[in-house]
Length: 210
Image 1 (spheres, rainbow, N blue to C red):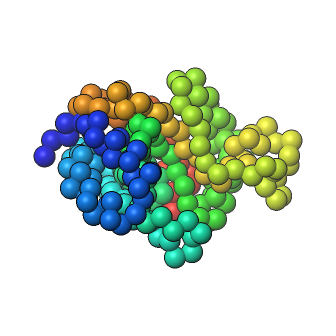
Image 2 (tube, helix red, strand yellow; image 1 turned 90 degrees about the vertical axis):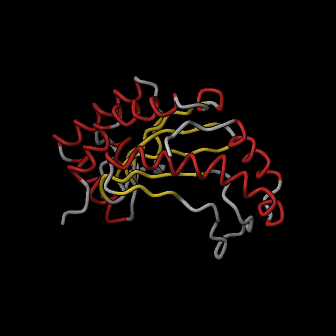
Image 3 (tube, one colour; image 1 turned 180 degrees about the horizontal axis):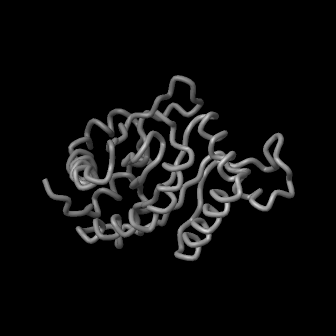
Protein backbone atom coordinates (compact mmCIF):
# COMPACT_ATOMS: atom_id res chain seq x y z
CA UNK A 1 0.00 0.00 0.00
CA UNK A 2 1.44 3.36 -1.05
CA UNK A 3 1.25 6.28 1.35
CA UNK A 4 -1.43 8.68 0.08
CA UNK A 5 -1.50 11.02 3.04
CA UNK A 6 -3.85 11.51 5.97
CA UNK A 7 -7.47 12.51 5.47
CA UNK A 8 -9.29 15.11 7.59
CA UNK A 9 -10.96 12.25 9.47
CA UNK A 10 -7.62 11.29 11.08
CA UNK A 11 -7.55 14.64 12.90
CA UNK A 12 -11.29 14.59 13.58
CA UNK A 13 -10.91 11.15 15.15
CA UNK A 14 -8.49 12.50 17.76
CA UNK A 15 -10.56 15.62 18.43
CA UNK A 16 -13.48 13.36 19.27
CA UNK A 17 -11.34 10.89 21.22
CA UNK A 18 -10.16 13.72 23.49
CA UNK A 19 -13.80 14.25 24.48
CA UNK A 20 -14.80 10.57 24.59
CA UNK A 21 -11.79 8.64 25.85
CA UNK A 22 -13.62 5.52 26.93
CA UNK A 23 -13.95 1.94 25.70
CA UNK A 24 -17.50 2.08 24.22
CA UNK A 25 -16.62 5.06 22.01
CA UNK A 26 -13.36 3.43 20.94
CA UNK A 27 -15.09 0.18 20.01
CA UNK A 28 -17.70 2.04 17.96
CA UNK A 29 -15.05 4.11 16.18
CA UNK A 30 -12.20 1.63 15.81
CA UNK A 31 -12.94 1.11 12.10
CA UNK A 32 -12.26 4.84 11.65
CA UNK A 33 -8.94 4.47 13.48
CA UNK A 34 -7.95 1.49 11.34
CA UNK A 35 -8.79 3.25 8.08
CA UNK A 36 -7.83 6.89 8.75
CA UNK A 37 -4.89 6.43 11.15
CA UNK A 38 -3.38 2.98 11.33
CA UNK A 39 -3.42 2.09 7.62
CA UNK A 40 -1.70 5.34 6.51
CA UNK A 41 0.86 4.96 9.30
CA UNK A 42 1.63 1.41 8.18
CA UNK A 43 2.16 2.70 4.64
CA UNK A 44 4.37 5.47 5.98
CA UNK A 45 6.41 2.92 7.93
CA UNK A 46 7.11 1.04 4.70
CA UNK A 47 8.35 4.26 3.08
CA UNK A 48 10.81 4.77 5.96
CA UNK A 49 12.19 1.23 6.10
CA UNK A 50 15.08 1.93 3.65
CA UNK A 51 16.58 4.61 5.94
CA UNK A 52 16.07 2.82 9.26
CA UNK A 53 17.31 -0.26 11.07
CA UNK A 54 13.76 -0.68 12.40
CA UNK A 55 10.45 1.19 12.23
CA UNK A 56 8.12 1.03 15.23
CA UNK A 57 4.44 1.93 15.12
CA UNK A 58 3.27 2.69 18.67
CA UNK A 59 0.21 1.02 20.14
CA UNK A 60 -2.88 3.20 20.72
CA UNK A 61 -3.44 1.89 24.25
CA UNK A 62 -2.07 3.63 27.33
CA UNK A 63 -0.37 1.80 30.20
CA UNK A 64 -2.46 3.02 33.13
CA UNK A 65 -1.09 0.67 35.82
CA UNK A 66 0.96 3.35 37.58
CA UNK A 67 -0.81 6.48 36.34
CA UNK A 68 -3.38 8.69 38.03
CA UNK A 69 -4.83 9.32 34.58
CA UNK A 70 -6.87 6.21 33.80
CA UNK A 71 -8.03 7.19 30.31
CA UNK A 72 -7.33 4.05 28.25
CA UNK A 73 -6.31 5.47 24.86
CA UNK A 74 -3.50 7.71 23.64
CA UNK A 75 -4.68 10.93 22.02
CA UNK A 76 -2.01 10.73 19.34
CA UNK A 77 -0.45 8.14 17.05
CA UNK A 78 3.31 7.88 16.86
CA UNK A 79 5.94 6.22 14.72
CA UNK A 80 9.71 5.96 15.27
CA UNK A 81 12.21 5.16 12.51
CA UNK A 82 15.32 3.98 14.33
CA UNK A 83 18.86 4.43 13.06
CA UNK A 84 20.37 3.13 16.30
CA UNK A 85 18.74 2.36 19.67
CA UNK A 86 17.05 5.56 20.86
CA UNK A 87 18.27 7.52 17.81
CA UNK A 88 16.24 8.33 14.70
CA UNK A 89 13.23 10.14 13.28
CA UNK A 90 9.60 10.33 14.41
CA UNK A 91 6.13 11.20 13.18
CA UNK A 92 3.31 12.07 15.58
CA UNK A 93 -0.30 12.81 14.64
CA UNK A 94 -2.96 14.29 16.91
CA UNK A 95 -5.92 16.64 16.68
CA UNK A 96 -3.67 19.66 16.11
CA UNK A 97 -1.77 18.25 13.12
CA UNK A 98 1.39 16.28 12.43
CA UNK A 99 4.77 16.68 14.13
CA UNK A 100 7.86 15.67 12.15
CA UNK A 101 11.20 15.41 13.88
CA UNK A 102 14.13 13.42 15.09
CA UNK A 103 16.94 13.19 17.57
CA UNK A 104 17.70 10.87 20.46
CA UNK A 105 16.46 9.79 23.88
CA UNK A 106 17.22 7.08 26.39
CA UNK A 107 18.01 6.13 29.97
CA UNK A 108 20.57 7.56 32.41
CA UNK A 109 23.45 5.76 30.67
CA UNK A 110 22.44 7.44 27.44
CA UNK A 111 22.29 10.85 29.11
CA UNK A 112 25.75 10.33 30.60
CA UNK A 113 27.25 9.58 27.17
CA UNK A 114 25.46 12.59 25.66
CA UNK A 115 26.78 15.00 28.28
CA UNK A 116 30.31 13.64 28.00
CA UNK A 117 30.20 14.31 24.25
CA UNK A 118 28.82 17.83 24.75
CA UNK A 119 31.53 18.65 27.32
CA UNK A 120 34.26 17.56 24.90
CA UNK A 121 35.45 20.42 22.69
CA UNK A 122 35.14 18.96 19.19
CA UNK A 123 31.81 17.08 19.38
CA UNK A 124 30.30 19.70 21.68
CA UNK A 125 31.13 22.53 19.30
CA UNK A 126 29.82 20.48 16.38
CA UNK A 127 26.49 19.93 18.15
CA UNK A 128 26.23 23.66 18.91
CA UNK A 129 26.52 24.39 15.20
CA UNK A 130 23.98 21.70 14.28
CA UNK A 131 21.46 23.02 16.80
CA UNK A 132 21.94 26.62 15.66
CA UNK A 133 21.35 25.60 12.04
CA UNK A 134 18.16 23.73 12.96
CA UNK A 135 16.79 26.61 14.99
CA UNK A 136 17.58 28.99 12.13
CA UNK A 137 15.63 26.65 9.81
CA UNK A 138 12.58 26.91 12.09
CA UNK A 139 12.83 23.70 14.10
CA UNK A 140 11.83 23.65 17.77
CA UNK A 141 14.14 21.93 20.23
CA UNK A 142 12.75 19.40 22.67
CA UNK A 143 14.06 17.12 25.36
CA UNK A 144 13.75 16.94 29.12
CA UNK A 145 16.07 19.41 30.82
CA UNK A 146 17.16 20.41 34.31
CA UNK A 147 16.56 23.88 35.71
CA UNK A 148 20.16 24.08 36.93
CA UNK A 149 23.50 22.62 35.91
CA UNK A 150 23.86 18.84 36.26
CA UNK A 151 25.85 17.63 39.23
CA UNK A 152 29.56 18.03 38.59
CA UNK A 153 29.12 20.40 35.64
CA UNK A 154 30.38 23.98 35.83
CA UNK A 155 27.35 26.33 35.57
CA UNK A 156 29.55 28.66 33.53
CA UNK A 157 30.32 25.99 30.92
CA UNK A 158 29.94 27.54 27.43
CA UNK A 159 27.48 24.80 26.42
CA UNK A 160 25.50 24.70 29.65
CA UNK A 161 22.17 25.04 27.81
CA UNK A 162 22.85 21.76 26.01
CA UNK A 163 24.31 20.11 29.10
CA UNK A 164 21.13 20.74 31.08
CA UNK A 165 19.25 18.49 28.68
CA UNK A 166 18.88 14.77 29.26
CA UNK A 167 18.14 14.12 25.58
CA UNK A 168 17.57 16.24 22.51
CA UNK A 169 15.09 16.38 19.64
CA UNK A 170 14.16 18.87 16.93
CA UNK A 171 10.73 19.03 15.35
CA UNK A 172 8.40 21.05 13.21
CA UNK A 173 4.61 21.11 13.30
CA UNK A 174 2.28 20.92 10.33
CA UNK A 175 -1.38 21.90 10.53
CA UNK A 176 -4.05 19.39 9.46
CA UNK A 177 -4.42 21.27 6.17
CA UNK A 178 -0.68 21.10 5.46
CA UNK A 179 -0.42 17.48 6.62
CA UNK A 180 -3.27 16.09 4.52
CA UNK A 181 -2.52 14.40 1.22
CA UNK A 182 0.54 12.70 -0.29
CA UNK A 183 2.62 15.90 -0.14
CA UNK A 184 3.33 15.03 3.49
CA UNK A 185 5.79 12.41 2.28
CA UNK A 186 7.95 15.12 0.68
CA UNK A 187 7.82 17.15 3.90
CA UNK A 188 8.84 14.09 5.89
CA UNK A 189 11.88 13.29 3.75
CA UNK A 190 12.88 16.96 3.77
CA UNK A 191 12.82 16.68 7.57
CA UNK A 192 14.86 13.47 7.45
CA UNK A 193 17.48 15.30 5.39
CA UNK A 194 17.46 18.36 7.65
CA UNK A 195 17.95 16.22 10.75
CA UNK A 196 20.62 13.93 9.33
CA UNK A 197 23.38 16.00 11.05
CA UNK A 198 21.71 15.66 14.48
CA UNK A 199 20.90 11.98 14.08
CA UNK A 200 24.36 11.31 12.65
CA UNK A 201 26.02 13.16 15.52
CA UNK A 202 24.16 11.02 18.03
CA UNK A 203 24.97 7.80 16.18
CA UNK A 204 28.67 8.74 16.13
CA UNK A 205 29.06 10.00 19.69
CA UNK A 206 26.43 8.48 21.99
CA UNK A 207 24.99 5.35 20.40
CA UNK A 208 25.68 2.23 22.48
CA UNK A 209 28.87 0.58 21.25
CA UNK A 210 28.60 -3.05 20.24
